[in-house]
Amino acid sequence: MLLRLTVLIPLWLCACSGPAPAPAPSTPKGVAATPAPKPVVPKADAEKTVLDVALGSPDHTTLVAAVKAAGKADALGSPGGIYTVFAPTNAAFDALPPGTVDDLLKPENKTKLVSIVQHHAAVPIVDTKDMKDGQTLAMADGTKVTLHVAADGSVMVDDAHIVASIHAVNGVVHVVDKVLLPPAK
Image (tube, rainbow, N blue to C red; front, top):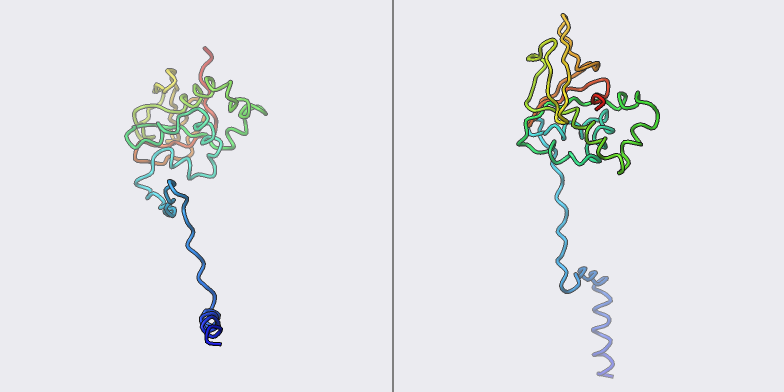
């Protein structure tokens, strides 16, 4: 009977103490434990690159897709660059003939896409207040665009209107209402 009580008392004590805590998850030997992800802290406006400006705009998702497909995201995301970027809106891309954007995003058309993306970027930074009517600007694709400044101060680049300008740590983004196409070679 004593033996029976020594077995039952510990079982009863265990049953009264509540459920046993769940064992801590174990990491297989030789595999490093993955740390909990750190929350992403949004950049302050003063820290945003021209790429961050485009990424943060719901009106520039097509441009962002094109920049990424062209392999130019790292350059525009580098805080060390000094860029003037003419950023067409999604509506500007939608105004292209049907299927144009989808065709450009195909891997076999990367060379053409790179040329178009580079035709929207220039070095150095040029603010609208510094633009002169008839001024040309050398673009990253090796071609030029012509700036047109109206008497009312509105500015066009080739036939696209600059509708807004946003400064970034590595340049300025001029939002335009048309896609700038490089001249035929």
